[in-house]
Image (cartoon, rainbow over all chains, first blue to last red; front, side):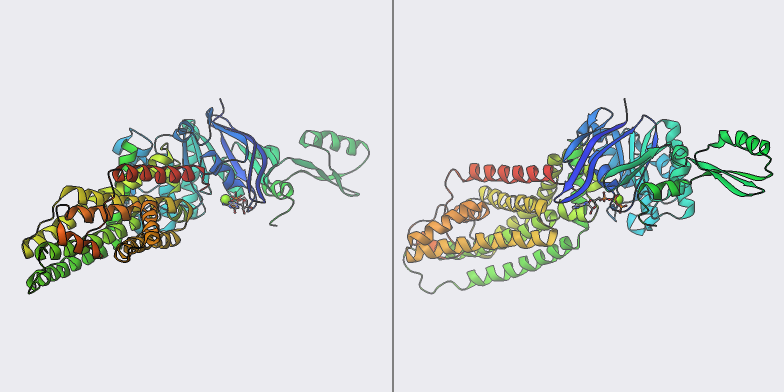
Length: 279
Length: 282
Ligand SMILES: Nc1ncnc2c1ncn2[C@@H]1O[C@H](COP(=O)(O)OP(=O)(O)OP(=O)(O)O)[C@@H](O)[C@H]1O
Ligand SMILES: [Mg+2]
């Protein structure tokens, strides 16, 4: 059973259509990146999945349970785009509060393990008020992991993190993959998504504009061969075609000076999918 | 149940951290000091020749304690409203609510927990300050109210009703707008009560009807009036008549249906709040 299955999901706010019929699936233990320009509907989708917002039409199920139900909420961990913990709570008290609400039996061991995982092991007894924004975000990630959720929803978890923090989060995501926890990751950081995600879904204007593995999206765009008579491009050719093309050209009496297999980066694929918005 | 208590404790801790709480404690001490001075003055100067049939001690005691009960209702309501006015929209706007409501706890329970958290603070507050007021009146003038327990229960219920109204408002209004709205309701209740007193003096049926309807629509007022009525439940004759004229004296009895009505009102207000909260996009 999929950790998350979204079918024909629609959400309208008055006249604004935030989601216009989205299909999306996150398999058990799969790490899926959700990309898209500002206002594409990424946060809206995640909010519906965790029960903060109600869909206008369509369905979303978490491990088989309808999104928003107690069973579905019991299976997720969520880090909101904008969130705050009460400033007078200490970091470990925040986790303890969420352990109680999630009915986790992890106790102090779970708390210290989670603080360790996000690199807050030394400040567990500090108050949230004294935390920097990035430290709060790390705590937010630890909070989302309380109770070993089966599906983790992270809405821009690294927006306030320094480069070391981003690397920590990448490490956390890889660790989650080892543990078989499914993750839906909203992000604007394409390089990050490319590095860790099994699959990428690109939303644009509330619709899925492209989906696939990072490699599929960064597909071949032809082969470029430098010959004595100039540069020749074979747009429909793939990497496997290169030896044959070279052999044919040599047989036709051309001299070959260089061969390049052209690929798009995820960034190019993204910009193409969203129609160059934001470029 | 664990979840409800956890959230109630969370709300409680938030309450105790708020500056409002400290301000309210200072105000309460000030109020009690003034009240003590006032009570001593009221009993120190009895009328030279009280009208025949007027129990001057009871008259002074009931009016002073009635005034004190009004202040307690007001302070208790301030407390209740400040503990609940941002429970839904206010907290959601600050990003505090989202991590909580995505946990497997129903929103209805969350709302009940917030009411419980407010009750944990407000009911003891009302009980203690009311007991102190009674002792101050008793020690100053030797007058003790006719009923001790029911009035304090009624004041507590009145405060809880205001807390529930404020929770309901918090589902739809931002914290500031909600605070203003609830205190406008409080003011409306107060005006209705005064209208009722005036109606009795000038013997106006229309005025009396308006006041009655408002008191039932905002039953914290009816509860306060009934509590006032009970502290002089055994008064009779001229004393009773004189008390009925004053703003803080007699108070109108709410009738035997009042407790049931107040409970039903509380349930309905919470029900509408839960319905709105459950449908709300956060
Ligand atoms: N509560 C709301 N009321 C009205 N419109 C909303 C609301 N929330 C979101 N929208 C609209 O829905 C659309 C999608 O918003 P959403 O927050 O899901 O975008 P996003 O992809 O997360 O963008 P970003 O990258 O900026 O976080 C936007 O047009 C936004 O204006
Ligand atoms: Mg967003």
